[in-house]
Length: 66
Image 1 (cartoon, rainbow, N blue to C red):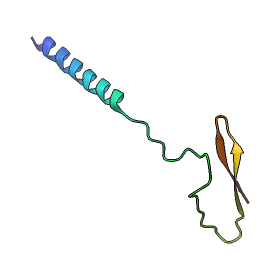
Image 2: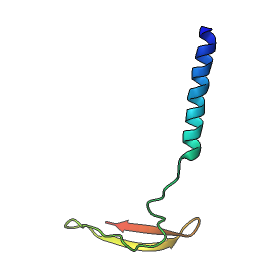
Image 3: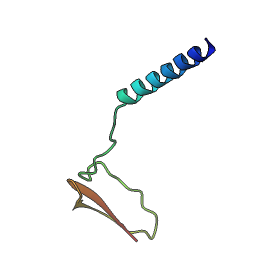
């Protein structure tokens, strides 16, 4: 009886984890396709240039700094 109770608990936990994982959503904060909306606070003596480059799929943002 005790063993059956443990199996039910394990199965319940696995079911809960599976449904949680399946219902999770992927949310992207930025696709990095363009530089709109990006702003910088520069420190004295720091040079920064932002440009768009070809990425693996689509565009990418390139940060050059010195």
